[in-house]
Length: 501
Ligand code: ZN
Image (cartoon, rainbow, N blue to C red):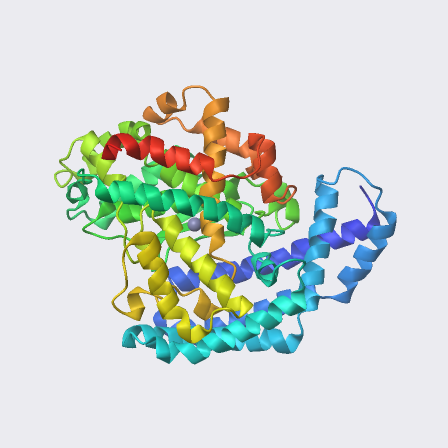
């Protein structure tokens, strides 16, 4: 389509994306190679770019182009590239301009301050030290939800930032179904006399060897190193700097190779989604990831459904032996059981793939109550302990292994947590359908062939960018709405033989 307003809008959006990608490059550098004393100037650079990007996204000229298009754009396919572009830029403009500048500034200040106080409070193991900062943040997030507006639930307004058009009540119902089944499954595993032989995975392995192994596996699943890099960081992430530039990162634990290895597979899964987006649409909605939940579904699917399967280990085991000998002496069955161990614990980021979702559900339930005002911030540690006891059978002995363990709330990230579990649910449902649609996936995995699965995901998910909503992607790919059943089936099918359930 050659409407002048459309061409101007797209050119403008692509230029804004260029600025945003420069910001991303500076942030990637900050977290990988930047010298420690360069931080202050880098913060100024990043804040300048953020200001420029925000000015462009709220420029009244964008509204004029959108208004013209509302009258001149012929009706067509709702999900085609043109309509998707106009729809999402319109959505972004309206969201960006709803928030008063004073609130945006106060939120930004409060989250910087919140993170500083959170770091101190963690050292002191003192929730009381963090409480006033958190109270202020909750108050501001309530104002933000009110300014953004919502139909049913104030939480919707905040969730929308990470899972566009997500409905809190639907997600709550799905997670509630999942929670009941998981609590039961965890109890059965705890009661089982069989214990996973995790000692088999411990042993000193040089980071260089771990890196070689990780690169081979990331390349095998399809991460394109001509269009991406792997580097070292403190808190691993994946970021995209251009249509052919996806950066993944990891950290190495010298005495436990699975940390870095599954970290790499996880980030490479994010990377496959980014590398599967259409480069010609870079910087426009059809070339952008649709939601954090769908993003996480790809990291989880490659990390867990693929990377923790016996078929995958048939392929990976000889490579692991080659790189990790003589530390890795256990046979493949032992390694397989060890990498699928399940054990209730206090720390979310160290949790296994079964209990992980219970950690998320606890945070989701608590942050909803904080935002609705039903739970006063001062009562948070007690509510936290009660839920941990109830769902996982463990109770933190101090705040740093409880309510102070995550950075999210201190940084003002409310509505973010459920996207982790949505990722696990989407991922399991996609994978179950891929197994039905594609013959012999296990045989292919066992010889290191992951192309068929990647192509399927590309056809069903990656190529669409934001043309379809998360729920539509799931419905179109699997013929069913999102449900907790596929994740449960996957976990039970795998863990029942291992734990003799
Ligand atoms: Zn992730």
